[in-house]
Each structure stands twice: as C-alpha cells, then as structure tokens.
Image (cartoon, rainbow, N blue to C red; front, side, top):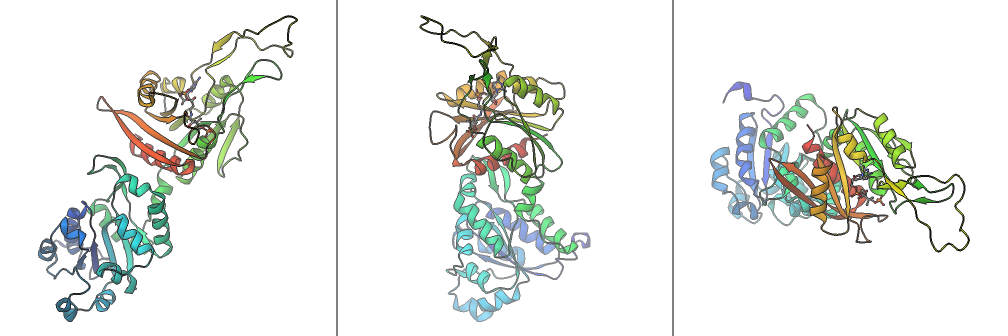
Length: 420
Ligand code: PMT
C-alpha cells in the first residue's frame, strides 16, 4: 500500500460497504479496493440480488474478510452478530443503492441483513444511488431520496450520462474515485458531505441565464391583439429551477398572471419585437432558453383608432408581416450563448422539432406536443423530448409527463451535462 493513497479521515475507519442489485455493482469491487488503499477497514454486505451481478468471493478476496449476505446465517452470526456488525461500523456506504433499496430504507424496513444493519446502526450513512433515469426521476424515488436525507442519509450523486440500458440521463452511479473523493475530502475538512442537493445547487453557479416565457401580444388596434394560450408556467418553472441551481436569471416575460419566482429579475414585454430587444439587451449571457410562444406574425400596420365594422362589410382582411425570430437571432450572434429552443408541435413532433433545431442553429430543442390539452399550453404538467446533435447524429431523450417544475429540473439536469 502506498502511503500517498492513505486518507487521514478514512485511515483506520471501519467502513461497511453495502452492495445492492444493480449493474453498477461491478464497480463496487474497485470501490472496496480504493477504500482499503485509503487505509479503511472494509467489510462487505451484499443483498441477495447483488450476488447476481458480482460474487461474494470477489469481494472477500479484495477485502480479506468474509462477506455477509444473509440475516439468517447461524454460522456468520456466531462470528459477529448483525447487531455487533451494526455497532462495528463507523461508516455505512451503500454503492450501488437501487430504487428498491432506497424505498425500503426510506420506510424503515428490516427485511434483509443490509436494511436491518442500517436500522440498528449509529454509523454515518451514505449511499450512491444507481438506476435507470426514468426510475430516478419518478416522483416516488425523488420523495424517497428526500425522506432519506431527512433521516440523515447522505446521497452521493447520481451522475448523469449514458446508461447501461441505452438511456441517457441522471441515474448512473458516481465513479468509485468520485465517491471516495467526496467521502474523504469532506471527512478531512470536517464538513458535511456533499449531498445531491448541494451538487444541484451548484450546477449552474456563476452562469448568466436569460429565459423568455409566456405569449407575445401583437396589437391590431388600441383594443385588439393577436396572441396565443401560453400561460408562462413552463418558462417560469425553468427560471425558478435555474435560480435553484445557482444561476443569475433574467426572465423576459410576455403578459401572464404569474408571480415572479424569488431571485429572478423580470423584464415585462408585450410584442415579439419588444421581446427581441429585451433579450438582446441582456447579451452576452451563458445560456439562453426561448420558451415563449412568440407570435410568428404581426399586423403590417397598427390602426390608430379602434377598427370599426364598415357599413355593408362582410369581413375584414388583415395584412400580417413576419416577426423576427428571437432564438435564431441569438443563436446567430458571434458571442452566442448555449441556445435552447422549444418546439410546440401538434403532429410529427420529432421531425418538426429536428427541422427547427437545424434551421435555427440551436444547441438543443425541447419538443412538446401541444395537441394534448393535459400537457403543453396552460396545463400544470408537461412532457417533452429533448433533441440535440452529437457526432453528426440527432440524439434524443424522452422526459415523461410530470409537473412543469419537475420537468424544468430534468431539462436543466440535461442542459448542465451539455454546457461547454
Ligand atoms: O406557457 P405554458 O402555458 O406553460 O406553455 C408552455 C409552452 C407550450 C408555450 C412551451 O412549452 C413551448 O412549447 N414554447 C414554445 C412555443 C413556440 O412558440 O414554439 P414554436 O415551435 O412556434 O417556436 C420554436 C422556437 O422558436 C421556440 O423556442 C420559440 O420561442 C422560438 N421563436 C418562435 C418564433 C419567433 N418569432 N421567435 C422565436 O424565438
């Protein structure tokens, strides 16, 4: 063992490494080695399912200690009973922690050796969640994660990126080196371990973000206008989620009835040309998200006085002219920020969104189906498919229906992985 790898905080510490049933379990062998190299005493407890991914013998060879797998093992209990083992540990570190294990621990179950130990211990408890991105984003898992934190568990990660199942998103177990680094750095400094919430709070720290939200209003005369059904909920949720991630946020908002999220600077506008001017006044910035439903056309001339029904007139013809395209204008700047657009589609969602991604030269587009009244315009929920170009391919990530604030968080989690 090289002395340089010893960690003052982990040296001599008794670490109980719990392993549950995830594909990331293969990384736990390396984590056990790193813990040993750092000078910790390591004992391993595996759930029944974990043994389908990695054998107890591998962990036994790496730690030099018998691996415990069962609560009802008379022989093992005769050596060190489970309550003794719970008292032995200074730190319980579960990596990977599956959604099921998180649920059982969040609700105080003690139906196998690992959950029983966690209930019986006074050790510092940490876990590195690992699961499919949709499972991690499920409100039940997120609620369990929050509950575990209130029960003094520290969550390390998860990381976001490519997953073994082919999906992309949050849910990957942190790399063993990162887990060890976070654990020992925080123990060395005597500060609380970095929780996932802390990591989220820093995701966009120091970045200037500009977001458009709501509809635009294109006046026809002093009392009439062209507009659409955007409520601003999606854009306001994004603004709040950016502030929660540490960004400085300016929200350029069309006319809506929402309160400004705390910490957000709001600039009110009415028309598309006003919105463009307000967005341009905020440049340069680091991230621009065009979530507003901007009217594509405006009246060629705004009547000075209220339009009157003409005598004998059967109808009224209006001449409309194109509005400037705000996201495309920002994406075309020499000092362009990372530029994200939305695509509001009623058919061929991904085809049309893919066209807009290319035509407007965006870094990412959030496609949503506005033909469904339960999502999109005005609703509390939304669902989206993120599209972006990578290595000449168009990549996609589907985000299931969820409340707009949760979806905003999921969109930003992904954007954060793509920022330069
Ligand atoms: O506000 P909510 O009620 O919560 O509803 C949310 C939403 C449905 C409005 C939102 O999720 C959404 O889809 N926003 C984009 C609406 C839209 O105008 O989509 P589009 O496909 O027509 O435009 C594509 C992109 O170009 C958008 O980023 C849009 O902001 C931008 N654009 C469009 C026209 C224009 N003149 N300038 C632009 O910048």
